[in-house]
Length: 265
Image (cartoon, rainbow, N blue to C red):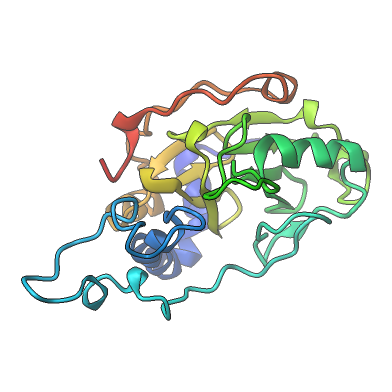
């Protein structure tokens, strides 16, 4: 029997109450390190990073560490599929090299950028995060892919041992694709995961968001929302483009972004 939403959230997140608040607060602070334009100089990235003024005569680097070339925030532990560079959470079960056929993995990378593929908990679901940025292009900064940034979910039946296996070949057509608020601009970074259901991302210059893999809802990432979610009272989700099947996502351009849903607008 499926637990009620409030009970389920408390069961998953209750023991991680303090950790979740710290993680969300940290994401709110460091997410800016992932929104800069690839290949651009720190100064050129000022607008995308939402730089604050330091005062007359004070260099911007003094109160905006992301503009300091020496500033570096490490990515989460990486266990990616072959030929990808995107990080996968260290606490998750990574997809094996045989999870997708080589041709399909190449198609996914071309369509959705660097791919992270993992299982957050035993018995699924499988999660795919595509950053939406072209991986092989002479253009600088790198342009977004046609398919854009995505989170795709394949919820396996508990009785489907083939689907549950990280090594058995899977088909992207079996996934449901969820778009963030700004999918067509790409540049979405996987930040961290929380409990067995939540994935935190930085959606380019649109802001930081928490995706609930069980409902397909997106929430603005903030300490206040984190506290609310811990107590089982989920905030109002942000408006995002409608989800589509994996087969539709593979043949369609990414929807246009919804700027009104950006947490940094």
